[in-house]
Length: 315
Image (cartoon, rainbow, N blue to C red; front, top):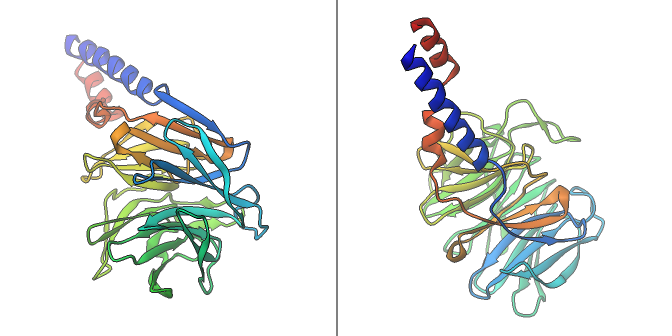
């Protein structure tokens, strides 16, 4: 009985700590985008600027309503419509002096200094181009969530890097060394609602062999944004559940923040220890201080239902 009571007390205290860490109370700043549906944020360290893609209209319609904004690291808007006339801009990456952004069925390039468009690359058969990643040689990878494909652009030529249901409706992309990490949405069963029967996982594809290896073996969520922190952990957003996860290379996940509405393609500012989260359905971009505690250790220590049952039987 004594062991059981002590265990219950520990469970209560640990559960309280977990719940407190799952609420976004460490807010640094909010930037109101006036309901422009911000989808992706990218921090450009060289200029100290945050580039934000804004869908504005429908995420699947070629309506010319989208734009890209520039903000500073203190949450001030520098230029709301740096470039405009896009359809539904999503993933952003910068390589050397060019910003690359996906836009439904094409990938556009813009000079960082002038905002001048320098590329318009059509992706044949694309339906919902999503995130963008770039390797050290300047090859551009772009996910198509609707067609279960990842395309690669090399010297303005397009080819299919990987395809198939095993990609689980790929969304967030990130190149780390010789690996392309993918935050998958989960195979979509209802394209009108983006509904899934089984949620997505985090995995990587070897850039040479294309072998797939899962970081999170079990389904985790409708995953979207994907970045790597200074400690080598993955920061991943679950768009549907409104959660920001931290995932170690062992696949153990912990909830950093929750209660968002549509957290999309996030960014990290390492020197300020900030996560930049486009809250798409709320029309807000938030900067949040990265928690330092390893909540994953607490989560692993929480008593499971089976363990509680075992304690009851001992009583």
